[in-house]
Amino acid sequence: DEMILEAKKRMNFLRKKTQQLKSKVSKYEISQDEEYDALYAQYKEKKKITKSLDGNIQVFQNQMKGLTKTLKSISQDFAKSYPPTDQTRGYIAQMHEVVNEFEKTCVDNFVVEIEQTCCKPLKNYAGMIDNCQKAIDKRTADKIRYDEHQNTYKKYVDRPPQDPSKMTQAQHDLKHHTDIYNFSAQQAKKQLFDVVHSNEPTKVFAALTEATGRVSQGMHASLGKMGEIGQQVRNIIQEPPQYQNQYMVEAPTNMKTTVPADFDTEWYYLDQTNQQAGPLNFKQFSEKYKSGEITDTTNVFGGNLDSWKPLASIQGNHGTLKQALYVYQ
Image (cartoon, rainbow, N blue to C red; front, side, top):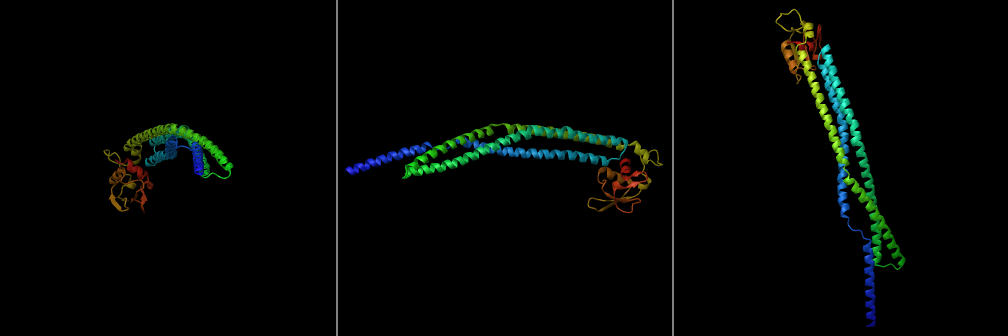
């Protein structure tokens, strides 16, 4: 009986000792941080938005070059499409000036503005994200080391080592790495909070939207000016006194314009399917040219030509075929 009582005493002692050790383990256990998890989810979304914003800025910067190229192409086509007279040269110069003004006041200003209001702030914010990621990585690494020491300590609690110093060392190591982890977790949470609650991406997006809106308005305004210039030139071409004098031959007074002798013939042309069409008299030829059915690059044949040639390349005794078609009434 005495032996049984002694055995029970020892069992009770061991049970209490084990409970004490487990309570010490629980003291170093890290609870789930729901606030951190919520911040981390928002952080990933902000990181994704930042990457998308950076890509959009690069796209818009490339598009600015494309807009200027488009306007220059329109201006160059305009210069090629009309006879080079004193009047048309002035309008062609105006057309070029519209393009230069758009490039200077819209595109160049856009580049400078975007650099100041979007690129630099976004670069600084991206730096915050990089530093935050480093803090997150350190927290993760410290958590791994904490888990390793916690497992070691739990193992000794369940099966105490023969050498008591091992238990003491394990407890010391666990406390040390618990402190390290708690500190890195606190730092990571602070940086997550700063990244998540920063309104820098919103400000950058607003600045980008405002800048691109101004460029869009400038583009529409420039196209409107170019359209007005083109209409003014077309009005001149419909009744150009300088060309009337140039192409006028001995003609009845009731005719506005007559056909230059070297172009007064039947004409043939190759349509869009490269099929021969015609013959056309000069009036029909002029009407099709003005309507756009026949263009400067259309291959035509007639008169003194010995082969098919692009319309814009044909030269007569008193000017080009293109000019004659323009002024014919």
